[in-house]
Image 1 (cartoon, rainbow, N blue to C red):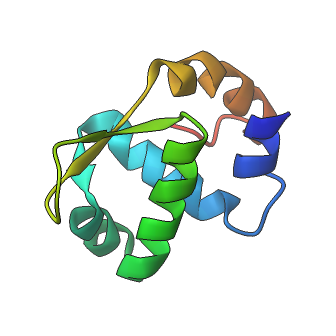
Image 2 (cartoon, rainbow, N blue to C red):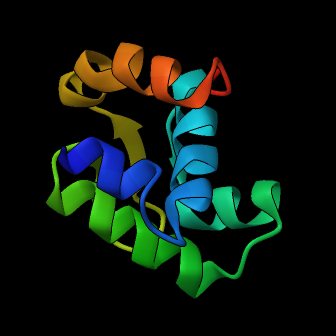
Length: 90
């Protein structure tokens, strides 16, 4: 499954899970995510692009300050991810 590959089966899966965990609380921009997760800004942008391209995250607004939020598609697979990860997705 695509979700398994994006969140479990790749080296960046853990970072993508951490991003989505924060986005469950509220929409954030890339800089806020980078600071909160102590990850390089470009790394966060890469993961956001991957998540957006695959329909799990949506952009709100435009430009540098645009925020990101989870989509209904992510909500749909979150139960599957919970099972696969043994409850690590909060």
